[in-house]
Image (cartoon, rainbow over the protein chains, first blue to last red):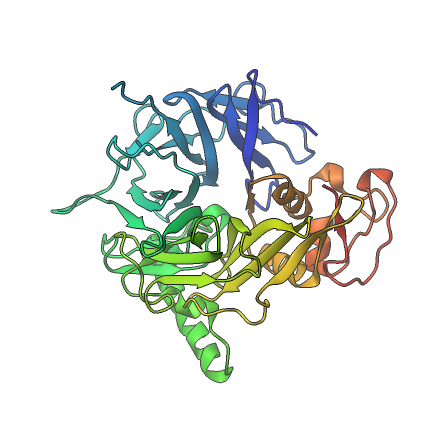
Length: 91
Length: 360
């Protein structure tokens, strides 16, 4: 099984089981230096009903941002937290 | 600058425009003088869909509450609800490796960092179970706490686990890492913080705890939290006589060592053929966790990925012959011992938890 995060470089930081009833997996991390999510169906295949072709990439801050943890709220919304890259001030 | 971002997505993967700015909220923690990147996060959705966020970087632990609308919650007269604690300030070396939101924190009377009612009956990732009201959940938490206290009375030595969850002052974040001197000796270090950033004295007397792991130069790399009973588990990895070794220490909610776990227990051992073998004590723990917590989160490096694969099997990992899954086996005490599930054959039957092998 492989997760097709969009982007040239990507990595998964966390895997989250969406719920015990559906057993869909949410995979989160980074793609091209930004937040990235993917959802897998119960059979392990990419869930095409999620985002664009099963994956989502969100530009947050600058290159180097990534999701570290994920939770699902009571309305099945996915809440993701991660670091945001910021540029250092030039002295 | 240490900075978090919280993004909320709808179930179809689209950013939720009702949260923050276009679905995203950014929280700044430190002035620009601090250039340390945040190294660890935890997140927990509250009953009202507000989000409790914790982060660790260097010696710092940051805590914030973000409302369901994506705005950092403001407390009248107190400003934004976010705080920063310091990890092991008395040690010459200290590093936060993992922050863990210790309990599901249900807000009572709008308080945060003040009077907080805590419960440990979190659902997926701390998300509320079912659709009951916040008040109902608080009542349930209090009942759960009372029952656990009663169990503690009738069972000498039983620490209650859940019983200790309703802690005055609302301790919420357990930071785990290593501390001591650089480069050695180093110890596994725990510190528990209230949501206002102060150390929680209900944990080990002063909110801090250090435990040796048998090797001076071993580094703590990760930690996990058993949400069911509130115990903290620090895992460390390192090389001992040239062999990779993982060691762990587990503590109760009050910071005392969990003797049932066994200090310095080697919980994973790398075998000659490259697989990781779980010892019975850890496998039993994993099974207990899964029996109550329907959703699991795993992260980290290769050996943690091995654990993840053992506990979150997908349909493709199901054994073709007995249809069991490795993770399910731990819970049911019937362990599929197939060396490779893809081979389509295995042996099933009553087995000691932990005798299975997890492919790396």
